Image 1 (cartoon, rainbow, N blue to C red):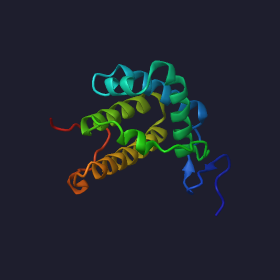
Image 2 (image 1 turned 90 degrees about the vertical axis):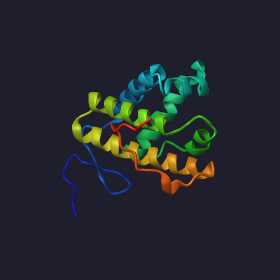
Image 3 (image 1 turned 45 degrees about the vertical axis):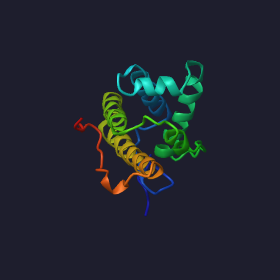
Image 4 (image 1 turned 120 degrees about the vertical axis):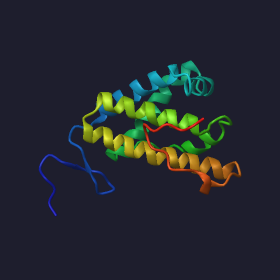
Length: 155
């Protein structure tokens, strides 16, 4: 099957939206983490775990992660799960805020199809992290409810 002219194919076989490029990925990462660092819910966690002088390298790493995820560049070679498991206070309110703030950021910066792709991947990633962290902590992962970007959880 031929693909339309000017389209790009992700290694997984899905089409990459034509508007999505490295500059957009970098803009999303920089904007999101600037907001996240100031956020009342997730900011304290990020600011405790990542020292100020390490933020430029961290932003590069996260840009590589999203570039690999969405553009298929393969630049990211890290293992994010151990770093997240090592954060004892990480819980559902943090993941919910991360997803909500992420959705808000991509909807501000990206065309709708690109924003939807970012959000879909973020939801998969966030829910996978929640599941693995629950397993690591000896909690019943079957008790977790699927979390969506933009939804609220009851306190």
